[in-house]
Length: 117
Image (tube, rainbow, N blue to C red; front, top):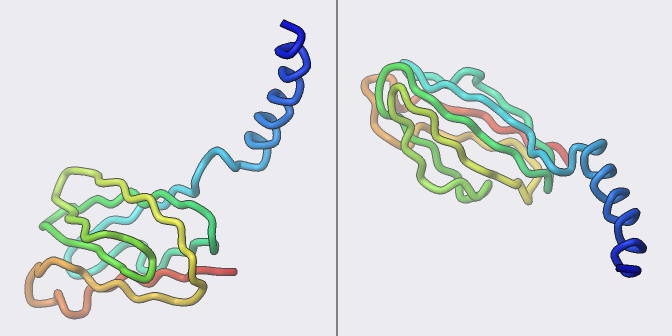
C-alpha cells in the first residue's frame, strides 16, 4: 500500500503532462477522394509526430500508398472511412498519386504531404 501511495502522485503528473501536451492524441487529418482529386490537396504533418488520416471517397474506389511515409496500400471505397496511422520519419514534400485506377483523370490525382521538422 505504501508503494502505491508513493507512485500515485507520479502517475497523475505523467497523465496530466500527456493530456496537456497532446501526447496522447495523434493529429487528425480528414482527406476526401473525389473525381480525380484529393480534398484538401495538401496536408501538413510534423516529423516524428503520429497522425491519423481519415480517408473517404464520395464517388469511386481510390487508393493511397507511400513507402517514404510508411503508408501501406490503402483502398478508399465510397461511403466508408478508412483510418491510417502514420508517423513521418523523414522531412520534406511528398507527392502521393492515387494508387487505384479511377478513370481518365487518374494520372493527375495527387495528394501533397508536407512534413515539417
